[in-house]
Amino acid sequence: MVLLIIVLALLGGAWWWLNSNRENAAREGTAFAREAIQKIAVQHDANFFNSRLSPQARMNFPASAQQEFMNEIVRLGAPVRPVDVQGKIEFNSQFFEPHGSFHARIYYPARYADMDLTISHPVGRWQIDEIAFIPQREQPAPAPPAAAPPPAAPAPSLAPTSAPEATASSSPGG
Image (cartoon, rainbow, N blue to C red; front, side, top):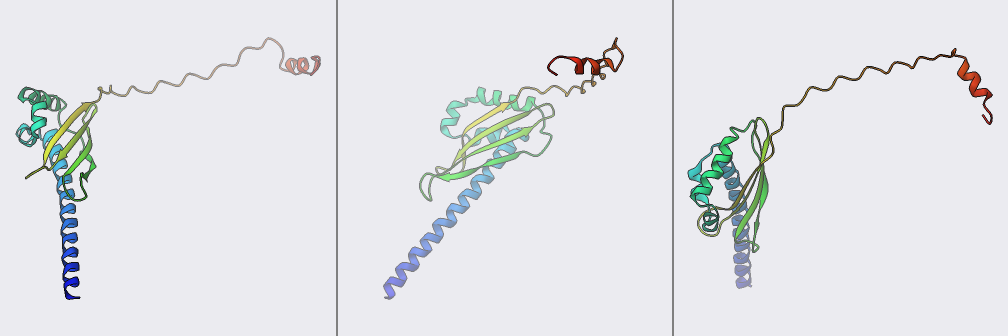
């Protein structure tokens, strides 16, 4: 009986430990995604971007592509309001191999841009697996509303006002 209690206590402790690690990984992943978007899109930190790319992402983004990517973001200027980041962390197995997909909409003075980010935590630290920055076409300044057209003037009638009533009542079938 004592052995059963010890085994159940160990299983309960292991379950609690796995769940707390899962919650911590989800919290850390979400914080990393927010930090990555903040550092890249708002602070234009090319060193952070370069140092956090996964090996595959580094192959997809050689140094020249990284510079071009950052220049495109810098050209839009500073965002005009806080960046809203949406997404979640998922796990390949129940408790291990966390990865996440996040989306942010960044508002600039003349337009907005969308940033999509895929992250993972294979060993040691969070990394950026994929990133996309999609600026929308520039929005022209809103044009002033067109003036309302003047009310249509009533058509001049050549007949006296009582004539249409007389014509309507004298028409056949009416």
